Image (cartoon, rainbow, N blue to C red; front, side, top):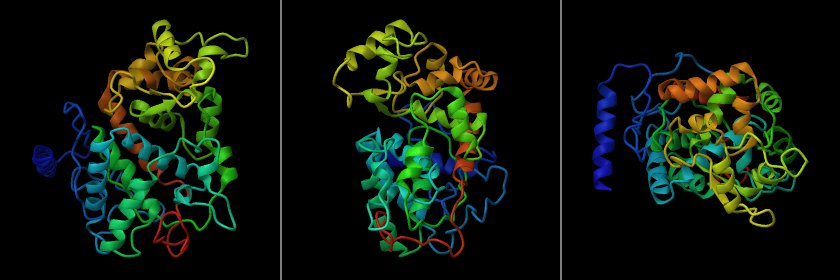
Length: 360
């Protein structure tokens, strides 16, 4: 741990001395403990400046600079421990932010447990038995409440945790607009309707993303989050045994990869067995995901159709990102900022929850 802290301090110091407008992380440091950073308002500890330098719907990077300047440091300290203990947690926290923003906007509705007036989104088909990381969010919230009571929203914690998880896995940093407030309700129906299923066609994926104000670039960039993490057999078993309703495998699956996956996921049972989304570097945030798609080794249908769906723009982006990790990092950071701006609750609307699982 001492060596990590030395590297962490060194990288942060180097970043502060840098004048670049965008930091692409430190991909050569292989486990991916990249530059973290304190940063008063959660803006990255001086590692990177705002992309575009604009405010987003009342959100701005320095939102907590006076009310809770240590917010990002607290988030990062909890993440460092959680991810060093279980590297897979980084992907889980990134996914939590995504599944939150696609339902009612980025309002922390995904964190709410059942309430007399609504059912939890945790029970939806995309989330049940697969969404994880809630305890890490609880720990972050608890520490923030001790230091800055009733100040930092759960929605902003999700955004900060997603960015921190990306950085600590070796991915890019970005200056993060903050100031979201928390929803007082959840939408089980919205969660079932708005999160793209893993067997989506390319047109289905585009429809889901366009519904949120996101485009083809955002679709491919954000899909790149699958460079880390795991997926359950139930999400890709169809590809192995009955892709088109004819009891045949998906013809786009590379042959040796297909046989490897069959050994993990038998035809009957084993639905909760897991396989890495990026089999080459499953805990390092890099562009290998796109290289694997190029060779027919995307795990989910929704991964492989970015190339095999024959949509010119997404095919080109997969190729460009496979060739250039800096380009991918830049677009991923921009798309994360854009996704984090989906219908935020700001001003005096909503609330700042004291406990992320319950309305106040």
